[in-house]
Image (cartoon, rainbow, N blue to C red; front, side):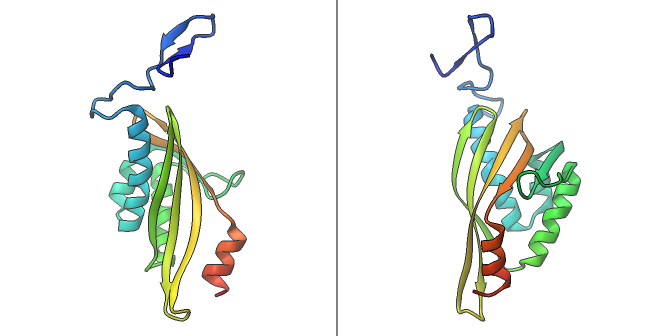
Length: 157
């Protein structure tokens, strides 16, 4: 089947509004997903709450881990990440890859922070799954090894 078409449930096809058609900003929907994923973490790295908030729908939800209690709405998510960046004042968030689908994306990123005590950077590779609607992130779920993160960033191994 043509990736720009989808089944309509009655055996026919209708053009999918989410695949291949440029948005008002000139980006394809897949490019919008990638740009939002990258911008979210770029804003986090820049410690810029306005930029971070701009990526989120007003009713967005965030879960630090699957099945954890959600944080919502968007302003609460921005406040939560404000505490995160305060806890890691020298940390950086770098996106290494984004895999985009019409309404969602997987964002692979690295959290890194230099440790003078260890004389090297501490690194944690993580993934976030985002869902997007009307050009904004509506859901963000983090996937990472919390034991590994604790060991590297807090226990000093």
